[in-house]
Every structure is written in structure tokens, then in C-alpha cells.
Image (cartoon, rainbow, N blue to C red; front, side, top):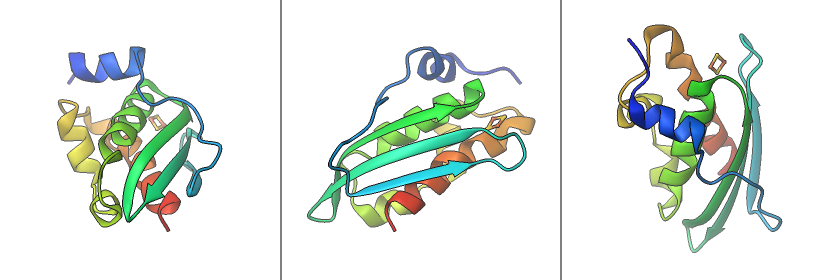
Length: 116
Ligand code: FES
């Protein structure tokens, strides 16, 4: 299975890249197997995520899923954001090859960690 056009677009033109100086929560997570890293900044107001930015170092699937997940949590209620699954992220990007499913775990872990 190859990457979808949508996934490649999020890899080549990642959205929401950067940092938030006055973030409400910050998380840095890494994949113990491959060493890929994602850092996520979130700004929360009235129980809702009003802004989110990320930086990641890793494979194309890790960059694309991190970018997509960061974009998708903006505007969401904190609890709704915490319940996002890796399957949801992978599906929204047209699916991931079997050996790349773990790449979407970074984003899920970072979201939960930043919103603790
Ligand atoms: Fe490490 Fe994709 S290979 S997250």
C-alpha cells in the first residue's frame, strides 16, 4: 500500500508547524523503536483548544500524521481531542501501510500528554 496524495501533501506542506510561547500545555513524545520525535504545543481557553503547533523529526508518515492531528484538534473540546485515535488519524489520511501504523501513535500520545 502506498501513501495517499493527501498524506503526501501533509508531509510536503505540513500545516501548524511552529511553537506557542504562552502554551497551556507542551508535550514531547518519541517512538522507542525508530526514535522519531514529536513536540506539541496547545493553547486552551474555556475547555477548548484555541491553537496548536507542532514540530517533528521523523518519517514522512510521522510528519503527516503529526501535522494532520495538530490541525484537527484546533477548535475541539479538550475531552474530544483526547479521545482521537490513531485509526481515526490514519483513516483521514487515506490509510497507512501496515508497517507504518505505529507512526500515527506519536500524535495521539502527544495530544494526551499536552492536555494532561
Ligand atoms: Fe518512526 Fe514512522 S518510522 S514514526
